[in-house]
Image (tube, rainbow, N blue to C red):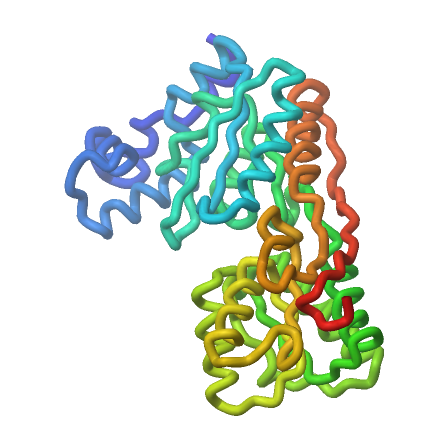
Amino acid sequence: MPELERQRATIEDVAERAGVSAMTVSRVINKTGSVATQTADRVYSAITELNYIPHRGARALAVQKTNTLGLILPGFSDVFFLELIGGIEAALIEKGYALLVYSSTQPKKQTVLNMPLGEHNTDGLIIFTDSLDDVSLRRLHSRRFPMVLLHHSPPEGLDIPCVTFENKKGAYRMVEHMIQQCGHRRIAFLAGEPGNEDSYWREVGYKEALATHNIPLDLGLIGIGAFDDQVAEGVVSQWIADGMEIEAIFAGDDVSARGAIRAIQKAGLSVPDDIAVAGFDDGLLSQYLDPPLTTVHAPIEDAGRIAAEQLLRLIHSGQAESLILLPTKLVIRRSCGCY
């Protein structure tokens, strides 16, 4: 028996550590029966302590490669992901690989135990933002399973490659453009979800641009748009209803920028004459908005392609770039008022 097989924890080991039967462990893993919460917690703790992966995964890896890569997404609600997947597939077709995509709209991060992609049916994973929890990343990394992260730094101490955009620089340049070229000073910012790395660095760029041009930071001008047009619309509608003095809005992405434009127009105001708007990403629909959206162009398709190329390098050579920052650039259209 290969050394890897002899060292693997078994379902019986997990059952013994948790003080339950192997059948109970199976129910917890496969979610096929009712198990008390405290019992399930003991099973999950034992799984983590023993680094247990269901045996079908190791068996598939031991037998053969699948020539398939997996992509894990937190949701699939915008054309952003169409561009991303297009880039990934372009890289894989050349190498004869297929792509499996798993998308979940559940608010909690996924784990390797409740996800249909992993060692048993892929040769490696591309993981978008916070789609997989840190415990699962550590478990897969400890087994040397190839992974590349998109727009998310690896947990501390793990050398998992990451591909992302120059978020801070792009945001800084956009806010500076709105200050210098458009003459705006009361510039609001629509952030993404708390903890999102892209949003964090875009907010840093926003704040640094204000500081460079001696504009005091007003925390009341920072709202959570959550990369969601309806959420952003609600935030901007409330700002307008409260009579806040706003000359321009820099949205953390184009989706929330669409929501901001909708809120302004529903209030009977004009974009950009009353309030200017700019976004980030330059998605496929942004040029067709009314007015066309000024935004930071992020190479979405390139990010997908490069992530796939890095994962293939990792699979075949064991090496890949630890961090790739893709450059961004400004795309000036009518929504900022200085086209």
